[in-house]
Structure formats: C-alpha cells, structure tokens
Image (cartoon, one colour):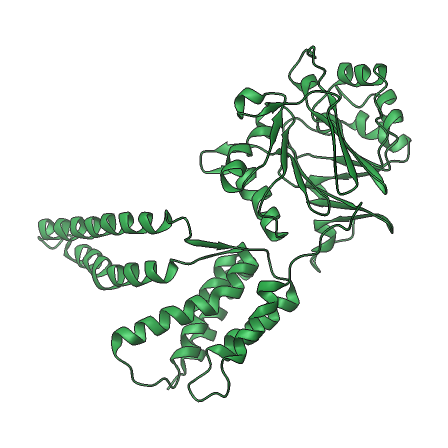
Length: 445
C-alpha cells in the first residue's frame, strides 16, 4: 500500500529530476498545491452524495489556492469553480475518452469511426469554449487586490488549513481570522511630501511610476510586441496591482515611438485613468503636453518642460519632459529628446536640476550633452535599456560622460526595476535584482 501523499512526493521528485528549475514556474506550485489541497480534504472524509462531494471539492480548491493565486498574480477568478464544474466532466468523461478511442481505431480499418470520434470531441470542446468565454466575460468574474506580504501569506496558509480541517476540528471558523491580514494589510506608501519613483524593466523601452501619498503618475508604458503581448499588460499593470494601486491619476506618454506608447492602450483598458497626456494626443484620445503646465500632489510639484507650444521639430525632440520636485529631492524624465532639445531647454532657462535623471533617449549618442548633464547635475543616472539591445544603448561615450562627473549609474537590463524613495531620511535606491538576489548570483556592485 502506497499513501497518496507518497505518490505526490514521488511525482514531485521526478519533476525536479527532469527539470530542477521547474520551481521557478508558477505552474509548478499551482499544480502540486492543488493536488495537495485535494488530498488534504479527501482524507478521512465522510460519505456524501457525489454531487455534494464534487461541490465540496471545488470549494476547497478555490479556498486552498486563494493565498497562492493572490501571491503570484494578485487576482483570483470568482467563476473558476463554475468553469471547473463544467469543463472537467466534459474533458474527463467525454473529450479525452473520445480522442483516445479515435487514436486506438486509427490504422485498424476503422478510420471512419475514428474520424467521427475526433469530430465529436472537437464539437464538444467548441461548445465548451463558448461557455468558458461567456464566464470570462463576466465583469465581476475577477477579484483583484494587492500582493500579500510574506507574513500575511503565512497567516493565510494557516487559516486555509484550519478552515479545511476535517469535520470535528474545534472552531474551524477561527481560520477565517487568519485570512484577515492577507485581505486587510495594504503595502506601504509614501508619506506626505515624499516621492517614490520606480523605473520598471520593460526591456528596450521606458515605463516609470511616480507615487505621492494619494496619487499615481505613470510615465510611458513600454513596447507592444504583438496583439497578445505588451509591456503595459505584462509589466506595468502587475506592478501597480502588487502595490495595491487600482487607478492612475495621470498617464503621460512622452511620444509616439512603440517602445514608449506600446502598452498604453492595454493599461487604459485595464485600469481607470483620470487624465492622459502626450505629445501625440491624437493617437490616444489624450490631451497635449505643453511646456509650462504645473500641478501639485501631496506637497510634490510636477512641471512639464517640453514641448513648447510652437513645435519642436522631430518626434523625439517633441517628447514630454517631466520634472518632479519634492522637498526631499527631484526627478527628471526627458523622454527621447536629443541634443537640439537639450540645448533649447538650456537656452530657455528651464530648471533641470535633479538628483535622479532618467537618461535621455536610453543613452543614445545623440543626447546627453556635457552641458545638459552639468545643468541637471544628477546623483543617479538611470538607463532604461534592454539586454543586448540592437541599438547598443547606452553608447560608451555617453556612459563615460556620466562617469567623469562621478554620477552613479544603473541600467534596467542589469538591475531590473529600480525604485528610488525620496524621503526625510534621504534618498534610498533599491534595485529588484539586488533585493531578490539568489544565492548563485555573484555580487557585481
């Protein structure tokens, strides 16, 4: 006799022997966790009618997977139990047996019957697909919230085990109390007057998030690579949800290049955006960026420095240049402006000084003139670049210009997302690759 838990352990061992890095994939954890929940609930259970047993099992899986789903994806499907209740019988009892029967009948003189089996299975799956699409289209079918921290996740796992304990376990309702930290504890945010700025890693492109106490600004959204994948949906949206952000006060798209505007449509569709501005407003049904506009949020000042109302020439030089000034430091986002736009800003007497500079045009040799760098006088220079990008950004000459002035340099390809907090305690910089460093990585900085 082999216990089900031992079979699960053997399967786990075989998977890891085949692919030790499987632990890095969400599917690994979801698959084994779901089977673990089934075994935990099924052991020593009372005899129930099949339909009641099935409903109990679906409820247990939904509840048991809740902490892990919020941890990995910051969302849970509320219609998943219904979808499983429909899809699993169709697959297990009909589609899979028909398909296997068709395979077995091939080549033994019964090809016509095999074709009928395949056609019947395809028809069933087609009908099922319409049902699943209808469920996925339900507006309230998804529960979205912030990512729980490690302590809240641990408490939730205890709560789930308590709630799903066998009948007779004392006070099972107490398990619900252990879920409260996961649902109620929100990620920390900036204090009044503070500015939290994050340069996201979207490959060769740009996307950044600026947060004050009660407001959120997104600057650029990365590239759109296909109809099924863009940085707005794949990077910016998960970041915002993980931080408990469910709306954007202002979206600024610097200009119309794909690596800056590509993810905007998906982001606007996924979250409520109060105001959208761009140097190409016609492409987003947005307002135009115009130099001189200023506003204040929670003691932090925002100012658009470019483009000028009379026009600026090239699309890159028309980029929306945004300066953010808090009492604890400043951030400058110049988009993809080049040398001409930099000189024009200097001649106009724009206040460019900033502790944090997102390097213009990804560090292209057509930008970051010595005069511009001197006027900004940054402490940190952030290069938004993709690993081994085809443009070979940043250019070595540009990197050298910042190095000569003693500017600390970080790039998104090597550091991942870079978060800078301008607080009363000073400027605090933390990169994702340093925070989430694995034991097998070498220290490079």
